Image (tube, rainbow, N blue to C red; front, top):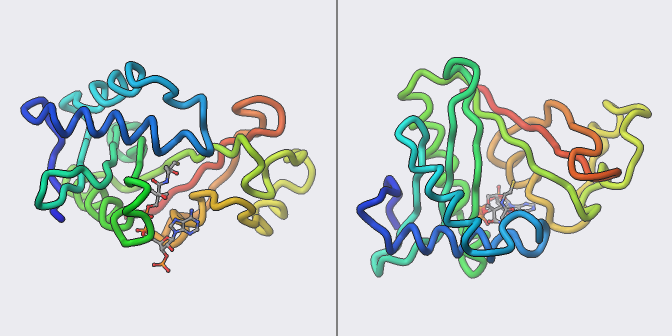
Length: 182
Ligand SMILES: CC(C)(COP(=O)(O)OP(=O)(O)OC[C@H]1O[C@@H](n2cnc3c(N)ncnc32)[C@H](O)[C@@H]1OP(=O)(O)O)[C@@H](O)C(=O)NCCC(=O)NCCS
């Protein structure tokens, strides 16, 4: 597996990237990219020269996963978005490798922090469906993973929960904000 820039000169990889968004987000976030057209648009936005767009590719040219990054706060903070690994290649270190690659790319551009938002729209964590205005920080401290939510993957990669946006996706469907200092 090697990690490389995704760019317009590899339309085969870009099409796989769009397909991965549709397939990879269907389970927890069916509204994210329900159709391939919306996913293609997302991929093409990630090709903007100021963004980072990297893919993990195997020897046969199969895209195993990909990751995007966009600068915020004058480039001090980069938002990680999106992130997906092919379902039959999960839990094999591909996601961790993509994160490590993004971190070195951001570091090389002078970034200090990577942040991300990871939505809970289906009560996959104890923050979903809860009233987050009551003892918010205690609820964050005691968060548990109920249905394979990826916040724990990010924690494994060194990311910390830095807050939430309650009701970001409708009542009881928060966005969980995470970040890591580089
Ligand atoms: C989340 C995702 C990117 C993880 O990729 P991956 O290649 O399976 O992750 P890795 O194999 O590198 O896992 C790194 C560590 O996180 C753990 N991990 C991975 N996914 C996890 C999950 N859903 N819940 C808890 N832990 C998880 C792994 O067990 C591993 O633990 P370790 O420290 O013991 O080695 C992948 O599951 C995916 O694409 N999911 C669907 C799309 C998605 O959720 N994207 C993120 C939206 S914010």
